[in-house]
Length: 141
Image 1 (cartoon, helix red, strand yellow):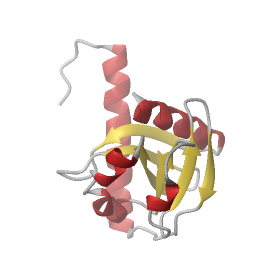
Image 2 (image 1 turned 120 degrees about the vertical axis):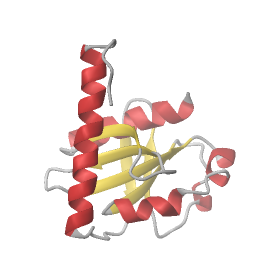
Image 3 (image 1 turned 90 degrees about the vertical axis):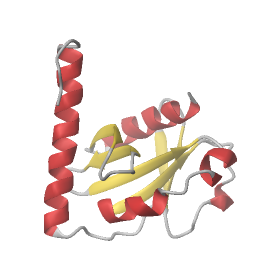
Image 4 (image 1 turned 180 degrees about the vertical axis):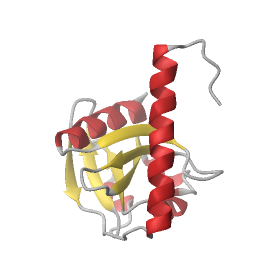
């Protein structure tokens, strides 16, 4: 799937910057982010991967993600019409193998209690994924 390839290249680039990432994380009921990244200094970024105009225009939830990260980005491929994307958001150009940050999303630091909750959710999500890989038959709560 094109969006998954964009996510892979984005995650690879973020890893080179010292971030760890998880995909398809649910920070709150009704929201599912494509990529959440935890930086070396505890910063939290959300990246939404869009494969085309229709994928972007059908996304009605992205503004709900802003409350769950210090920075928000779109990740798109070279063929995406970037003029559609809000100028006040970050922009990452990606393919299946790597990415480049073209525009840094503005910093909107999370409140300490929200940061603690998001970081704990990130850790639980990552641990569940690892456990599922190690023991596919396990019952995960």
